[in-house]
Image (tube, rainbow, N blue to C red):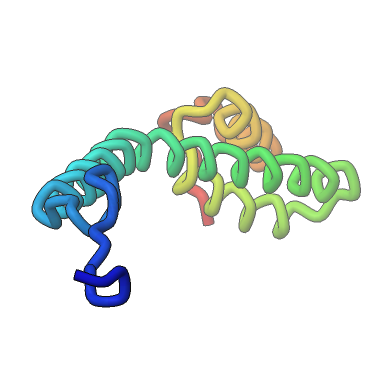
Length: 113
């Protein structure tokens, strides 16, 4: 046999001899891991985003309150109550808004317009 007619085989560690089902299994495992991370981190990330947005609106509402624009404060109160209803900054803003309109108990009797 001559050297030209011999077929040289790649080494055993080469990618041509790897089992494609193992690669598929690793891809599936990686995708499942990403899905699990997404499922467990989506809700806290969304909550953090909503709270940050509410804090930005609170700052704008405080500027409007200092200027005496209570209609803008009322619109901000409506939005921030939907975004983060249990946040202390939101409750403080609602209490100031209700106190301006003379509501004796901001948590029970104030109606946000």
